[in-house]
Length: 148
Ligand SMILES: [Cu+2]
Image (cartoon, rainbow, N blue to C red; front, side, top):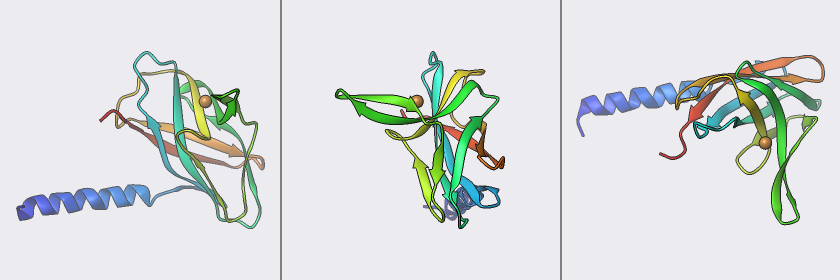
């Protein structure tokens, strides 16, 4: 492998580390690693996943999600019902003191209904999460094509 390629690779790695190392903050809690799997072109919904981290001494209760990308955004969870996985809305999501909550595939997620534009791999979607005290954190979710 040539030295030029090594340097190029190193640059990419540093860029990736910097991108990951910049969480969005609202004092006590933050959002990390927000992403959206690229939905099929005809889909009228998309899911977003992320990690919520609470660095404070008290629990934080997330009560809503807002975004210009979709007509409606809400927090969903998955539950087994009569042998079938079903989605249901979560009116609130509590992050324990010094704890974290991971929204991931097959579990809790942010449901984005009625997208206002077509997504492409690499796009960034602004999502704002609001807690019960009125504080909000905005993050940029990166669209990833999972078929590749
Ligand atoms: Cu859902």
